Picture 1 (cartoon, rainbow, N blue to C red):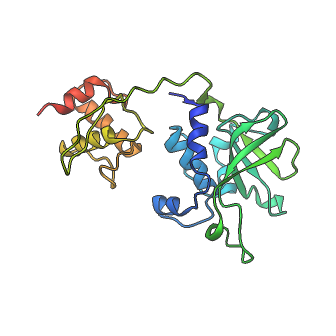
Picture 2: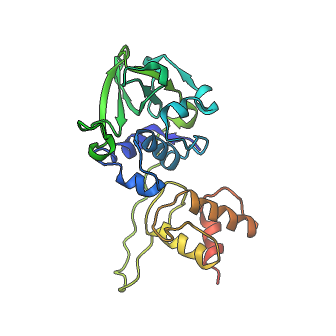
Picture 3: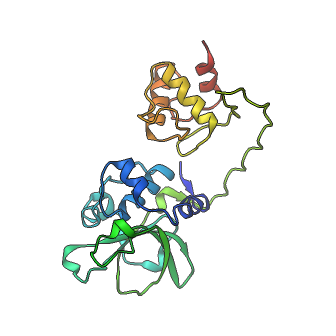
Length: 247
């Protein structure tokens, strides 16, 4: 399922002002985090499971995934595309910075970048925050663009479902408005799903009922659907929920 570009931009802009701390904690590694942020957005927000988990810019450029999609036609950049930048004056060591396209203005594009402002000691990740920067198509620091168009669409987003008024919950409980759930969604209904899966013996990840439908929750859903002879798509609709509620 392709990600709507407008929705992706909204998710990307939520990262503006963040430091890399949440990523260091999530991936259990402390390093320059520009590519870590791109991976997190593309993989967890847009569902691009094909993207390699490689937090070295030059290393990522050598992967088959990148080689098959790279070009230097920067004016063709679209939302979700990955742009590599040469910013240390040594082109021989490969790209050393990366951002993700959130807008193409027609004469330039804007990138969401992390790990871009450092201190005099060169320890970038200790002082940097995520922000959006603009480049014209002929900026000499630009290295490669990775075309991600196969994973995105300009189709209109599905309208958000109207919230249903629920009575006040008793202490220690929470209310749930059921939606069709899929990876990337968050809420009390996701939390309820995670608890139901866990109770039935299916793993949803170390964070358990965090209300965030990530890769581990999707895997748990698919295992449940397989065991209960449901359509195995990782999406929780009426049939899967009905089966889960049976006790």
